[in-house]
Length: 175
View 1 (cartoon, rainbow, N blue to C red):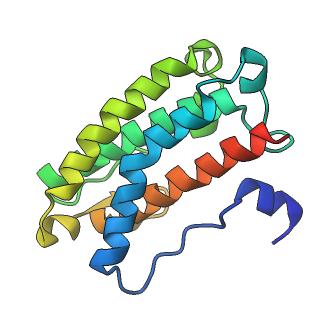
View 2 (view 1 turned 135 degrees about the vertical axis):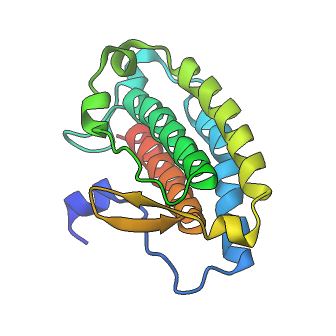
View 3 (view 1 turned 90 degrees about the vertical axis):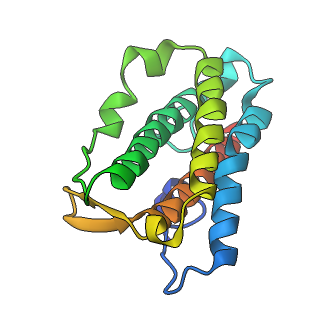
């Protein structure tokens, strides 16, 4: 992996396993459940100056990464609810890079997104842990890729997303 790719994807890109065992699924759920606590531990004592550090040249600041996770995970939670209550809904994508430049992402205190992540992940984890096998196989359509994503796979994607951005925060702290 090239240096820039390693900085962009410090844990690599998400690769869906051929078989998603219950053990893999439980590990993914644990990552989602633990993520807010792990982020809080990484950022709670950082100064405003330290929150402006980036994980790579041209990358987001620590502050932007945390606010992005709140935005992204809210969208994912809604996608779960849509898939559970509608017949294979087409989800609405969003421009995360543009969202990362909005005033709330640049100026809002990091604690607002930490609190949001804590409440959201608590509810999300409760929802995920109660899903039946049939529920886990429900899917939504992503219009950008015209692909169908099961909730089971989306749990894996967001487990990866949590660890991906946690690595970004840790890397930025060391820059």
